[in-house]
Amino acid sequence: MPRLPVAVVPLFQFNYKKIMKEYIPGLAGVPATKSAISSIDGEKGILAYRGYSIDDLVAHSSFEETALLLMQGELPTPDELSDFEDLLQKRYEVKSKIRALLWALPQKGHSMDVLQTAIASMATFYPDAGASQPDSAYTQNALVKIISNMSTLVAMWTRISRGYDPIPPSKSMGYAENFMYMCFGEKSDDEIVKLLDACLILHAEHTINASTFSTMVTASTLSNPFSSIAAGVGTLAGPLHGNANENVLVMLDEIGSPKNARSWIEDRLKNKKVIWGMGHREYKTKDPRATILEQMIKTYVNKTGHNLSERFETALEVESICDELLSHKGVYPNVDFYSGILYAELFKFTKEHFTSIFAMARSAGWVAHWHEQVSHNKIFRPTQIYTGKDFRDYPVR
Image (tube, rainbow, N blue to C red; front, side, top):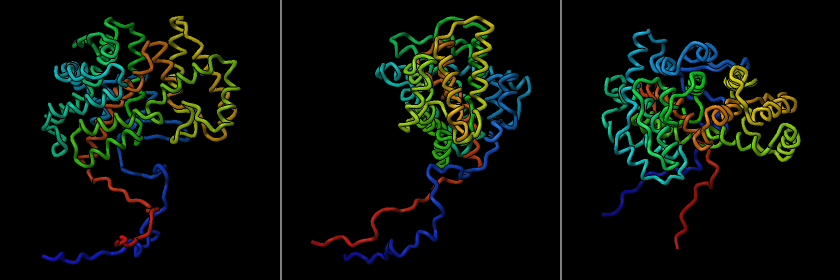
């Protein structure tokens, strides 16, 4: 049977300039959704979750309460918070086959690659947790399981990657305290637990950043929450996103001491290279999270007499010089600038695990965005500006 003719409209007949709007690289400043979860005032340096400033949340809330706020939209009652804390603790344990999966992976594997693999694999254990019924008890429990298991998975890899058996979670400890216990096998100082809890709050949510957008795009296909959050983990792993705090620590070690900071920075600027931890697309002033982290470090050191390495003093000098040289461009420290120092100097984590701790906190925001997206869904399908060859005939030889 002969082929039926196919009506083809040559590409060159389309006037792309008529149907396309201005191309904006990286979608900078382009509203991609409507969201009630968090907001940023970049001029004033304000970040709020559901209307509450992070300054207030760090001062008065906990990670568990903040996570529930992000998920349900309002601060929980004391009974609701207590029930949520109990639920998180009951779900700390991971499936034995996922634990076996982690042991089967190369010990030199990066924590974010491991975490992405583990989170994606959880979908096989919860096949009915889907976007068609985001408010069902089954799916809601799966969302809680993601947040709860994140801490266990990250802690497990801090030990497995060094050849040690994981430490089982304690179902009597809060989220931050239990994480430190699973990592180090002993109860942490209360001040350290408070610091980690504050860090988790600060990293829990940040509007439509790259990893959250990745989570939302995947969710818009009505993919399950595990696949969607795994997409977010993979995106957060990049050096221009969550992985930047590792590079800040490398940068500070390379500078060595405060006296070397100016020449190092001037050389970087001369050669148009990145100064890690400096600048943020959303802020025209200092990232409020960086301000809080810096003050937290100073307060802890003054209160305990803890001796820091030269990294912190070097960081302060780098910030001072960058303020002199770059503030007129709206370039100030972002959250990554001080978080790595806190993780390494006070929490004693190696830099390979910094970003996975970031992901552990951000899981609360990702889960909230997954639910918001699938509840009012329209699949993301942007267009493009074609820059290739015009329509042409295939050469018949």
